[in-house]
Amino acid sequence: MIRYSTTVAAIALVVGVGSAQARDVDEIGRKMVRMETCLAAALEVRPGEARKLEFKSEEGIPVYEFDILNGDGVTWNVECDATTGLVSEMEREVSVDDPMFTAKMKIDEATAKQTVLDIYPGASIEAHEYVIEQDGSAAYEFDVSMPKGREMKIEVDATTGEVTESNFELWEIGSE
Image (cartoon, rainbow, N blue to C red; front, side, top):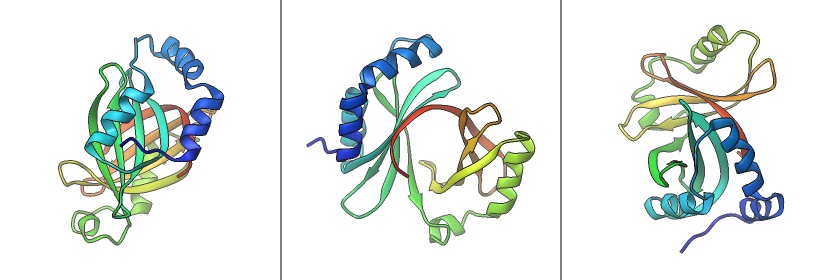
């Protein structure tokens, strides 16, 4: 059964995800599958309620990312390649004191934030999450506002302090 929150469904229907996709496809320059195709793929691997949808560009590849709350109260970030309709990555959101996170964490949050701000001068960090990657590693994931108004998603490995991902977010539906 495909379930997604009223917020995601209502906004997608009212504002017309298709028109946003058309604009974003022009920016990315690739043909994409429908958001519903990726939603079905995401819910197949992580059943639950899709509470948020982000559309971003990862190294030029369009990606839908769904925040899915499962029946156990765990939120999963499930990414779907918008050119193939296949799930490409899953991360489990955790709290900063979660044993899976603290066991891997060698870099504190303040240091991880400073790493981002050193790489992107003039940027500001708007939100953050703590995640456990598919391979079991721990990471800080930051929503970063860039000086010219664009938003980026930047991930910093909690063990090494290295930036492991930096992607432009093109739009978002739902809430954190």
